[in-house]
Each structure stands twice: as C-alpha cells, then as structure tokens.
Length: 401
Image 1 (cartoon, rainbow, N blue to C red):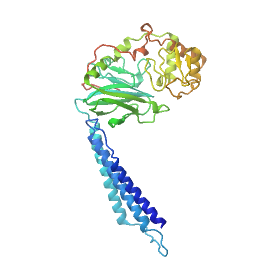
Image 2: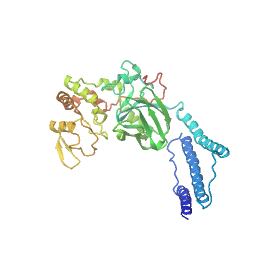
Image 3: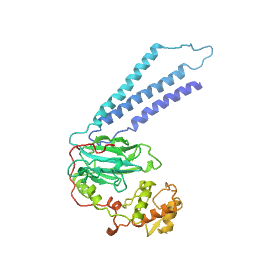
Image 4: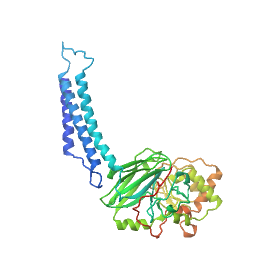
C-alpha cells in the first residue's frame, strides 16, 4: 500500500504542476518590436519541457504502481532493448531540434540589425558601464584598450580626427529614443562582462580584445534596469545601470548636453606633480572602479568630488567631519565608519605613507569650483555644443584590440 501512496503522490504533483501553470500563466511584455522570435523560442522551450515533465511524471507514477514488489515475482534481466533505445533516441532528438531550431533563427535576426539602425557603444570595466555615440559625422573614432588612461577612459586614439566629436557618457545612465532600432557595440577593458537588459530580453557578452554586437528596438518609454550577467569580480553584484527609453526630442536634448572627446581634452587642467602621482596610484589600486571624481554617485562608494571638508552621515546616525584623519581612517580601515547609503564592500588597501599622502594630495584638488576644474571633473560635466544624431555606418571598427 505504501507504494501505491507514492504513485498517487507522483500523480498529484504532476497534475498540480499543470494546474499551477495554467492558473498563473507566464507571459512576456511587448516592449521590443523585434522580440517575437525570441519570445516564441522561449515559449516553445516551455512547451517541450512541460510535455517531457508531464510524461515522465505520469510514467513514474505508473511504473511505481505496476512494478511494485510482489511475493514470488522477479524481474527478468534484459541487458538491452534496442526498440526502446531507438524510440527514446528519436523522441529526444525531435525535442532537442524543436527547441534549438527556432533559437538559430532568432539568433540570426539578433545579430543582423536593419540598415537604419543607429549605433551605440557600451564600454565595460570593473564595475561600471560607460557609453559612446558617434558625433555629427556619424562615424566612430578609433579606440583601443592600449590608449586607456585616466584622462582617456574610452581608449580614444589621439590622432584620429573622427573621434573628436564622439559623445562620451561616463555615467551608468543612458538614454535612447523610442521606436528606433539601435545596434549595440560592446567592448571590455578588463574581464568578461555581459550587458543585460532583462525586461527587453537583450544580452550579449563583452569580450576583451574583440567587438561583439546585437540590436533591438524599444517600443515602450520607461526606465529599464541594466545588469552584468557575467561574474566579473567581487563587486559584480553592483555593476548596474539604467537605460531610459524616451521620446526623440528628449533624447536629442540629453545628447546635446553630453561632453565630446574634443571638449574633454580641451577642458583638461594640468595637475601638480604630487596630485598627478596620487591620481595614478589611485587608478593603479582600482579606486575608481567604486568612486567617481566627477560627482556621479556610484552604488559602490561615495564620489571623491568635494570630499575634502564638510560633514558626512554614517549608517549609525552619527555625523563625522571629513577631515584628513577621517579620510585616512576610511582608506586604511574602510569598515570602521560606513557612510549612509553604502554597504561595507571595500577591502583594506595596502599603501605606503608616501602613496597615501599622494592620494590625499589628489583628493584635495577635486573641487567643483570652475577655477579648480580638472579633466576628471570634465568627464561628468555637460556642454551645449551641438551633437548630431548618428545614423551612418562607421568606416572602420571602433576598436582594433
């Protein structure tokens, strides 16, 4: 009788799963004009897996009941069953083909953007997203990881004239127009990342040393979360961003307010040797993966702009004066006093006294007053010079890693 109960339980679990599926139906929102093939592929996979699950569940219930132990009955040894093996092979092959074939069709469409798609480059690094648009000439300037420096975060090729009007966005927030196809080009500065917009079912690996791409066309204006879908280090969970799908007018206004590569270079003010040394040390130690220097509030750490002076509120409700003693303690013992709104993810940094002093010298010059503006501040600043909408294909790959 116990065996019969097990068979009944297996049957009820299978039946309950089917009932649950139809009483709480799963569906995708129609927010991308070119996602029909992807959605159909996923639905086909659900159906094939669902049929296999129900069939196996019912067969298990029947086998448990039919072949339960009985006194005086013994199973016959059967080393092989060619007929059964052939049937299972055929059925499994059909199921796999039914699931994979639509995926190949969807993938073919996924990597062949329409001719009127404009281009956007997504540049990834631990643990931030940055974005680049071609300027009024509609052509991306050449870029390469070997050119990346603190004052050249995208690795723009200095002598390439096509890059002068490229529009650079160093924040994690992006705006794109609704009802326009966009070809997304992906580069990585360091490790393997994956640009993922879950709601739009869009994702692609960003591979160091090569350019990958895909396309989509958003049809609903809203804010979409951007995530990294590839484990890329200790702060992978904080590699987030926002993609705002907006009207064409709002997109153009926003784009015209962004800084170009030429403006970024022109706005540079030389730092003192001590501050330059501190900046280079901070960059080498990976400080700028979690801290901005242009006022952008990253999820991982407070900005360094205007960090010298004033007060800061801690998670325990107390306030501290941001003097040299507080900043030194925050660097050497980062978990001692956590700023409100941030999690204790920073690890202690080993620095010599000279290195620490150089970083402090650099932090002191990061002021928001115009007279103190540096190239790092200009990366987040806006400018009102016109930037044209890009529709042209580039004459060369944006990167030649």
